[in-house]
Length: 485
Image (tube, rainbow, N blue to C red; front, side, top):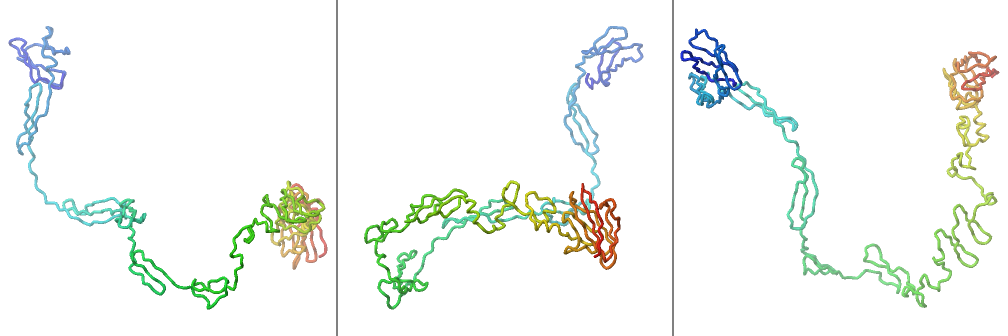
């Protein structure tokens, strides 16, 4: 059943009774039977096709078809009525398919307010990246609008290509960039050839102006020279003007007037058989050849092979290997720059180790020489101070400058030594300056049994020696030596 039903149904059950159906929300139908005081009960049911009714206990009778209960409602016209008029709704369709026209009264005119005003306030130019904005700095009824208007981004103009056009062509300017970043290419026409209006003739100069654009200028005159000259001598320019000449004092030989050739009466050419003693280039056949003279004439000495040297033979020079007898005759010392570095693979080449390299023991290829070994045994200089450092990489024996004892200017201590090398031995020498001094050893200096223990007092009349030996990264003090200064 639809949401609405026919407003009223009338059913005649018996001549004296009337049954009416009242519209209520589906799927129900409310019936009223008149007269109302009849002692009868009525039942309704929905069969899916029909709505049926009956007196209680009697047979069912059709009341209305279900399809007849469907009703459509459509809005028709909507009319505005004068203020105060009653609203109206009229069905201009059918009972089953209603079309409703509405009449709606207009509202009553309200009290008229004051007229609003609008004024322009400030207009501000803002940056290109800022948004445009309008704000009311007045009231809703008296508006004052302030405007923020962004300016456009600054344009740039760049010179592009400049092309030379033919004479008479129109000049052109083309923007190959953008309106905001212009790149201007220029086309500029070349001027037409000019016309030479006049050329004035002068001394020894004539002008033909038949064609004004291409006058013909002719010059005539003599080169200035000396008052007299010797016959057949060569003339030379005098100065740099190109207008003066002078006598060179040089006579041309008769070869100047002869042709080059091999026949009699000609100037000899390079291949002329009349030339004797000359060495023709054909003698040299290989790159690197040397010309030498044999018993009778120049001859070719073929180049030797790699590492051979040029030697004086019994008669002529020759190439050959240098033998020991010849090498013994070579004396002198090669410059240091010509000595190759020593290495474990460069056999027969030696470099000498320095005293410092000998002390560190780090080099594997250099040879020892007496003076450097002797220098390494000298006293390495210690520096006096509250804590005296000992670096075994700098020496074997230690003391002061010039192989003297290190004079102590106060009560000092001997620090733990560094760069220990197993097997190194030596002695350290100390003295006292001004008055008796106390020397204390760091615990890293291990005293052997029977060695004098410290701290050690040193008078100004004494020298104190500390003998040591190194083993397994330990420094053992083997003796404390005292003697008169």
